[in-house]
Structure formats: C-alpha cells, structure tokens
Image (cartoon, rainbow over all chains, first blue to last red; front, top):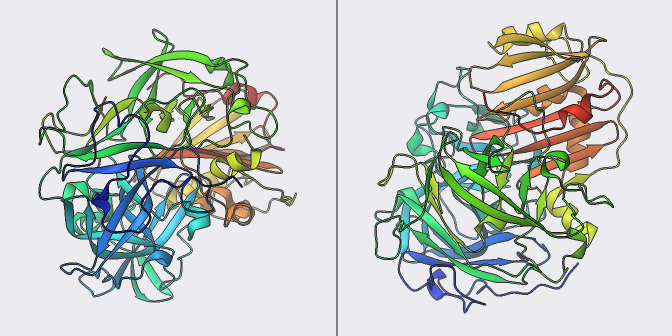
Amino acid sequence: MALLLLATGCGGGDSSGGSGGVGPAGTGGQTATAPNVVPLTVDSGPPGVDYINGLFVTVTLCVPGTTSCQTFDHFLVDTGSIGVRVLSSMVTLSLPALMNASNHALAECIPFVDGTAWGPVGVADVKLGGESASSLPIQLIGDQTYAVPSSCTGSPVTDLQSLSANGILGVGVFPQDCGDACAQPASSRANPGLYYACSAPQSCAVTSVSVAQQVSHPVAAFPVDNDGSIIRLPGIDAGGAPVVTGTLTFGIGTQSNNGLGSAIVLPLDDMGFVGTTFPPGGTTYNSYVDSGSNGLYFLNSGLAGLPLCAGGLDAFYCPAATANLSAVVSVNGGAGATVPFTVGNLATFRAANSAFSNLGGPMPGFPTDSRIPGFDWGLPFFFGRSVYTAIAGRGSPVGPYFAF
Amino acid sequence: MSVGRLLRGLSVVAALALGAQLPASPARAALGDDVSVVAADQVRLQAELKVMPGDHYTIHELALPSGVRLRNFVGDGGKVFAVSWSGGWRPNLRDVMGVHYDDFIAATRGKRITRGVARIALPGMVVVMGGHQRAFFGHVYLTALVPDGFLSKSELMGGSPD
C-alpha cells in the first residue's frame, strides 16, 4: 500500500476554502474564488484507498432548511452518473427519509459498472461552494434499515472498501438518475425497477416514483448556474503526477467565468453517446465521456494495435513505447474534433503517482451488438482540457451535450 | 506499478471453482440453460424475439419493453453459452447468470467496485460489464461451452453502428 499524499482540506470548515493547488490551475487559469467554482483534486483518495485517477470534490450536506451540516471530502466527481450518494456510515446528521404518497420510505437499487448500491432515499440541502440545492433527494448507500430485495442484483456496494470514496457527486447530462421510465406504473415492464417503496424492514417492493422524488442532479436544482458544469484540469507530464488540482465550475454561459468560448459542442443521443472515429477516417463507434472512469477504455488489442499487459494486468495496454494516437469525436459521423491521446506502458508508471494521462485499456465486447460503445473517454481525457457537461433540456445551446 | 493496486481499482480476479453440473431452471433462460426456455422468457418478459444465425452458434435476441436487449448465444448443442445485454438499464443478473449468480457474488462481494469497464474472470466463467447511468452493457460466457474460434472473432469491438 503506497503512502498517501493528502492535499485536500479534510473535514475542516466549509467547502469554499480552496486548497492551495499544485501546478497551473486548469486551462482556463481558474481559481476557486467565485461562488460558482469549487476546487477539484486528483489524489489517492480517502485514507487507505490508494485510488488511481480518482477526481474528488468536497461536499456539504445539511438537514433541509437548517444550519445542521456536515462536510465530506473525497466525493468522486462523476459525469457518468446523476445525483448525490453518500456512504451512510459517514453521516452523523439526521437526514429525513423521503416518503411516498402512501407514507412508505423510498429506497433505490442503483447499478454501477460492476457493483450495485442499495439504500434509502433521503433529503438534504446540498452545498457546493457558494451554490446550494435545497431539499434534494439523495441516496444513503449502505444504510441497512431495509433489507436488500432479491430483485436488487449485483455485487453489493456498502462501505469505503467497496466504494473507494466517501460519496459520489453525479454531474452527468440527465436531470434525474432514472427519469420518466421510473415514473411508469410498477407493474409495467417499461419500469426498470430502480426504486422501491418500503413498508417494513423486510418489505420493499418496486414502485413508481415521480421524477421530482427521484435522486436528482444537484446542479439542475441550483437556483442559478443550473444548466451544466465544467471540469477544468491542467495537463500533466507523461510520467504522471502525485496530486493534480483543478476546478468544477457551475453553469454554462451564465457568468463571466463559464462561457463556452470556442469549445466544440457535441450533442448526445438518448443514451448519452457521441461518435468516435478511430483511426481518423476509419470506423465510427459509439462512445462516451466519463470522469468517473479512471482510464481510456477503447476497442481491443487488435483494433487498437496495442499489446495487453502481462502479469495479470490484461485489462490494460502495455505498448513498448508510448503510443501517440488520435481519434475524431463527432456527431453522426459529421465534422468533429480531433482528439490526440497517448497510451503509455503501465509497467513503467511510477507507483508514487495517482494521476496518469496515458492509462489505457481494452473495451471487450461482442461485435454482434453494435450498441456496445467502442470508446470510454475516462479521466485521462480531462487532463489539459475544459470539459463542459450540459444537462438535458437546459441552457443554450440546449443540452444534453459535452463540449471541450 | 503494483499489480494489486491496479487490480483493486479496475478488475476483480477470483479463485473460485464453478460446479460442472448445469441444472436448468424451468422458466428463465440463463447461462448454461437449454435454448428451449428462451421462448418462456419471451412470454414472461413480454419481449420480442429475433433469432439470428451465426457461425456455429445462434443468437436468440429478446428486446424488452424497457429498451434492454438481451442476447442469448446458443451453441450447436442447444445450450446458452453466453448472454450479452445493452440498453438503458442493467438486467437482473440473477436471471442472466442463473445458477452461476451466487458464484459471481461470492467472488466480488466486498471488493472495490470499478468505474469504466470491469472484466471479472472466474474459473470457467468470464463477466464483462461497463457503461454509465442510463446506458449499460456487458456479457458473460462459460468458457467450457464457447464454440471453437468464437472468442477470437467476437472479442472484437463494436463494429459499425446500426
């Protein structure tokens, strides 16, 4: 287990304190001084976690309408999910439970990539810097008040060991984590069954939940600057960095510090995908941008032209020398943006570092299902860029889109 | 770079033996089941069924009302050797994996979850999962039942869009 290099202001005071920072503060030269800006850190995560390419922020939760608040460091900033989720074991506040019209407590079974988080829905005021979302439905992960129903499948995510963060700040492109589908009748096969109503500790059943009661995007619930957010991280050396600091800015085109400028806007389809053509002029694949993915996951060894790592690390590429590649990210195969990227040899990465811009691996899948995406532009994509994530139905141009 | 550091972050490798017997549950088409139960699933899930021939296998695709697409890969012997899924939601993994679900949970419980793509190799079974909220995909296959040559051709990616 490597030593930790702590740079965040753990637990001390309010989230607007602004840690000092290492290196240039993002391509926009931003510092976390405006009310709509909070600091971001890429480090090894909470004590004992040893995270690689984890993007973290400090979040304050309050009992709605009160000054009874608790501040949490190391929430993972995730453009691949929606909503605020906190490990219930970390929470000392008494947050009210969200009840449905039948006075049953609502709980959620939410899938992550290979795990599933079960827990009740609570209500909190969520404060990020100078912005606040009042009475927001959030999820309390690992709370054992209600037993996990048998229909909630997947490997359970319940604690710091399994989550590797104190919580998740999901700032993706949708206003809620589920949307209209979960508002369908519980008996409808169109309802994906994420939400449950619990009448007793052993009695939770799939239920219909209005979008207003679903776990929702905190930024969308801000009174202002509520159309999206911007992640700004500096570029880093090929050898990686122990700590990287950047900023998370709320709103797009709402203040003097969050304009789109010359960024290229890439509208998304209803599954949050854009096209990626690799190599340029070659085949176009579905792709997505996800700050919660810690690597660039794309294609396979043959199509990428990169060997897999040996020694049990075959989830990654290990080219003999750093591979300089490029792809074109576009909408419907039209004009797009050329994205140069590099994939380094994992075997040469320095273990003392927690941030790597050239961590890459394969995306295995069946070729017969073309809906499976070919590229996951994870956190390495964000280094040296300002990446805009616009919420569906908000802003001008109207979301959902990514821009960079 | 230590192996353990990355594996905890990005994949889970388990050492757990799978039982050789593959008893089929009567009304769920799951991994290792006979193809005959796919039709029962079609009714139970109110799904549309499409059958597509391949090279030494057949794909029985179920399009669910939730938009999820489940593909059962059936070998010449009539057994489901792989299941893939894609769509806005992840399917019930107990239904997909059948008798192998408990082994999967035992191998992954308490491990760090991954963000991005997860490849979980158990003796006799491989699970791949990925995606983001409102778009999930993955597949699982039994190594002993996979037709010769299938993996070398099919662990290619994506292909061209529809």
